[in-house]
Amino acid sequence: MKTTLIIKGTHCASCKALIEDVCCDIKGILSCDVEVATGKTIIEHDENIDWNNFKKEIENLGKYTVQLE
Image (cartoon, rainbow, N blue to C red; front, side):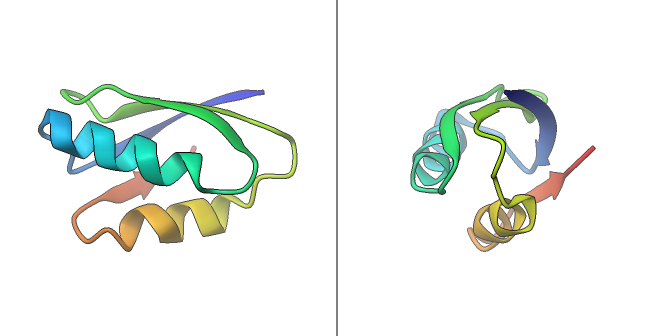
């Protein structure tokens, strides 16, 4: 499955790398691609992903806000 969402606060290649790296460690996520300029993020995942955990993990990085649709 693929889900598109917005992660506000991305502004550089380091943001992209950090978010994508953290996503790879979250259970159920198979891949992640962040578009730096817009924060548009495409997550490939299995059906059992815990979106609340995903949001918590990303927002705990300190400067990002996840908009789940």
